[in-house]
Image (cartoon, rainbow, N blue to C red; front, side):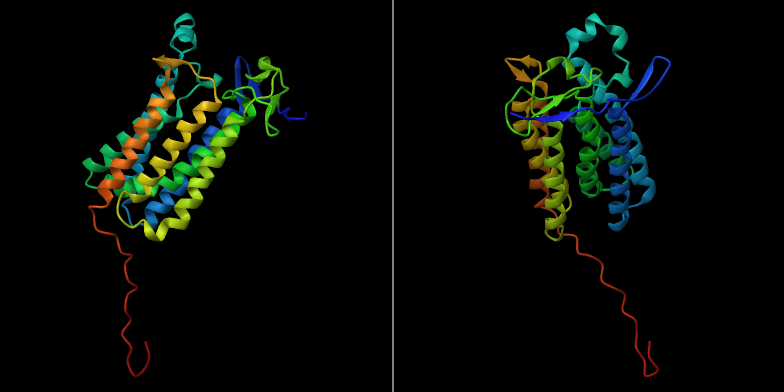
Length: 274
């Protein structure tokens, strides 16, 4: 049976002991794309630029730190034996869910302190999150640092580059990052289609959180991960937390009035025209 072979060198360029990998390139692109979509959506919704920028900055900073810390905790035994690698960010290793939860929480706090509804700001961020995650996962797919379980499905991938983290497996595996890309793009399309009906503050973000959390919970079955406690994985716990947050936000949104788009200004008409 033939499988999809990934032969792209995961290293884009090397300088001294530092290797720039596609993971880092697409992570940066994903952040930029996600922020761009979020800022555009925030302006469309009439949110104040200064507050949105501050929330994005502190949320992103906290999210990146948390993403690394959650990853280190998840693979604690490895980093206990190799403590010098804890800060080796160029080698990859980030917990997306951990970063999203902490970063989103910090961004919401910044908005609240500045007098902006966190629900309104998170609604503006929902499509940016979906699009940014899809872009960022392209690098993970190339590098093979989030390879799935071995499988014989026709869309399985096998990594042929010795520098790939999945090369040593020498087995066809689930293209886990591709699943997450499709999940995020599907949610993005749903948000776009349901946009006119998501007028209550918090509805868009709540929908994204529930769908992405459920999707990630299901996808954990296709990827090997260490168990934290009672054979439960960290990603499963964080996925459930995200779903619960989404459900809470959705419930709260039903108690808020719908936001109606501002009407076009009426131009008075005289006998001589406008």
